[in-house]
Image 1: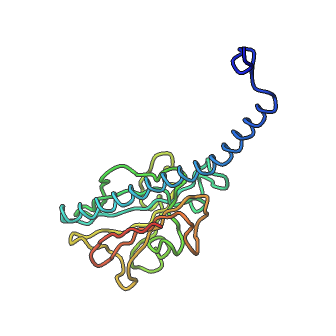
Image 2 (image 1 turned 90 degrees about the horizontal axis):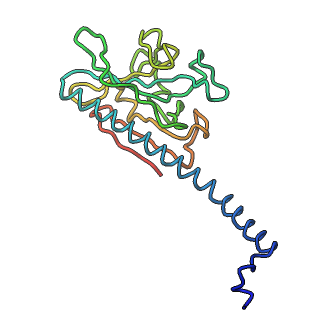
Length: 219
């Protein structure tokens, strides 16, 4: 009987070590790639959520002939190192919600709060002019707090800040047209916040104040 067909024949220790080494090397190469793919998938989900919510709010304003307000929520996640639940300014902009503005001036939620995919945030710096320029003057977008709004949100209560702007019945956005087009940029939380330039993987949404049209950009 040949050695190759003998049931007692097996791999040598050296062969097993080589195979194990190759498997370890392949695993080491695959993990970063898988991480990048998961991050890109989460960013795509968050981007689609943002586009859908803003597009729906604009359509609701036109259809219902009323103003619809978008609120961008900033709050701290206690599971993230360096963030404290009772200090919203230490947190990130990571959720949004739409409200129908009633004739009385009060706001009625059009739906639930939408939290962005895990590890995705809205940049609060120059990459997101809607956030960065909020509260700079009496003009919109406005910057307020959960206590001022008097609305409690799940797991956060009123410990949050909010940037608010509205779509009007003619489809335009109540944003200063002199500023030009307004931006919101999403990226992974591991890239930081208040960035001067976008990271390699990002998503930017642009709103034309004059007509409310939305454009999207992604590398």
